[in-house]
Length: 80
Image 1: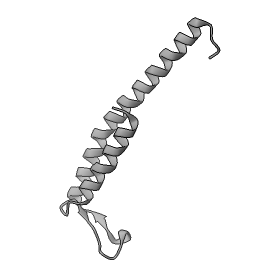
Image 2: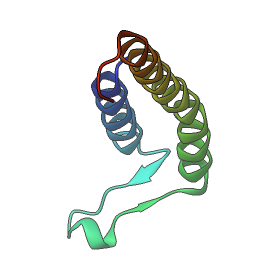
Image 3: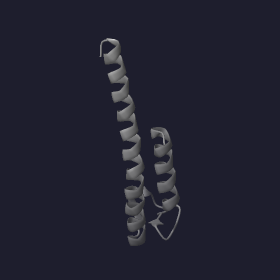
């Protein structure tokens, strides 16, 4: 999964959790009076833990691609 895709999924997922009254109390007064319910805090933590696995996998792929590019450039005698 691409980095931008993960960002979009994170934003969308958290936004959807916030739209669920079981998970998030949205105050009509303002954001400073809104809060996560206990159930919502658990859901948010679970969601974040799951998404962190996707983030790590994406970062590992970027690092792997970059290291392969550097090896190939090195073998070709190009400046790294």
